[in-house]
Image (cartoon, rainbow, N blue to C red):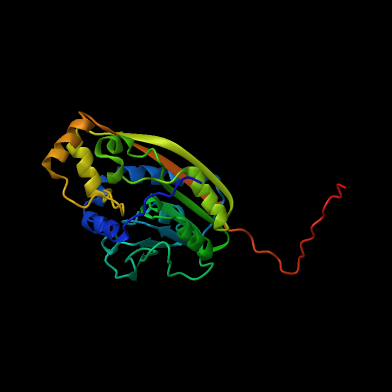
Length: 274
């Protein structure tokens, strides 16, 4: 596996999204585009879930409920202001959706209680996704599906080159995520990626969109002092006119393995090679 990524300061990350809650939906075009592409992938999977966990939902979107109108959708996020105003656990009026404020590594859900775990662009806010994958497996029903997207190492490479590596998140490699799915006990993992590039009219718009969507650094080892006007000037100059932002989007899905029949014994047969 690759070298461990620097940890994420969860309190700082939560504060980022608390501040961005009101502006998030207006600037989350990357998350919306990736969600649409994930929904297209469900076209090729036969699934009729009764309960869906939208893990790291942000402001809940109606797309999952529209695709599966008979399913109960649980919108879960670690930032309460990102969820509808129903309290830490509540039903959203006029829908079959519940909102829950909780961490992905400690889901307040019963074992085997959901048939689809959906997580769009949330896992890169964890220092280590493996505990979340283990929780996803725990709450998935037999033959349930996990489908997720996250960011890979080439994301925001333009900003990293100008601002310095310590000011931009280090993202986990796709192959390491696939290994984690197996370690968590999920079966038949499938991983792939694509590169999406967004262009901005100027550096200020790029930086403003990142702040308004909560996408600023929460690295535990980030510089704590104020950067100052000189750093801001160099940052804008380095990004240039009509800057681009590259996002390596990693997609994955895996299944909850079927239950083993305790009455069926496994017999190992060894070939005699002597």
